[in-house]
Length: 482
Image: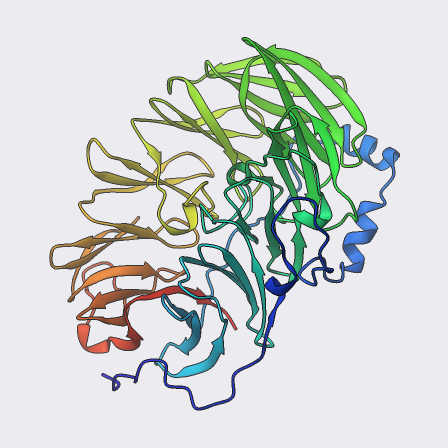
């Protein structure tokens, strides 16, 4: 086993932190200097997509039934372990052999959460957010009010990071693949806004973010491809690269409307009160509070009835990162619906597993991770056809791979790997703190240290002798491909 590292020894010069919090002031109408966190250069290809004409939109509406979106899931590849000290905010990037490749001072004290997409790392503290570009080691620091949810991602994509204050008035958003950033204080300074950033809707690319503003009874589209926001009446339901869907619920009825990104209405239809939606080509798949599956024509607003869910009162719906599956959560279970409105699977008594990546919405690229608290078990479900890939009793914390088809759960003697090939017990010291995106390694916390341990499935089990020391515990951690 490699020797233990001295914690956070750093005799090298650290990159300078551009602390933008000095320009931030309390709310109340005071002016502030420009915030350089706001809006990096927009990719040329994205600009071309924005200026598409209404005729192009109309052409899309009369196309096929299947969505043409690409996956917004997290890649399985990784070659680095990212660690952030929970007291000082110092950031270390280690390789799989435990060698430190980067040391960056963020100046973000007492961090509570991190998120990593490509080379973008977002770090939250009780009242600040730091954005670190791991490719050039630059750091940008911004003051926020108390951050309730830490670093989150929008429902529908795992490519964008969000840090919001508890007032619901402001959030900082970062698009990992392009390193673009957006500060809602400057992009959409709306008086009386109360955004529900925890239920942000996104297309798989993570570039178009639809958020309900309950303070003004509207929805707002924040897009990295537009220079200004767009506003829509009603609650945010769904968004793709060209369309926005909102609902205005009155009593047991709703008006569901379809718009283009500029805010021009294309169609609307009357339905019972709805809780979930997915844009599927020229149709919008809807699910009512009572679990009825409906189909609304995006071009005409005509509504037709479909199947009936048996998962109790519908609470919320999420579009998978592939863009072609609607995951519906009810009071008595969870269901998966395809783009043609067919029910692929219903799972009684099962709820969304909320560890790590799935903190506020399911974001695995292939399998849905569910848990049944009454039976203390975990289920891995293939979203392609709704079949159960694996299920196992779980008494401790469970983590899943980026595709969701592999899980690791803490046991009394180590951890258990759960896959389609069966369950494998791995006897190691300590509790697992994370599972790598490809499911090939876990990080276990033992005796105040963090060890990277290769996992095994089938008849073999992990060899504790292969453990690689990653440093002291008391650090936030993630994985990255650099």
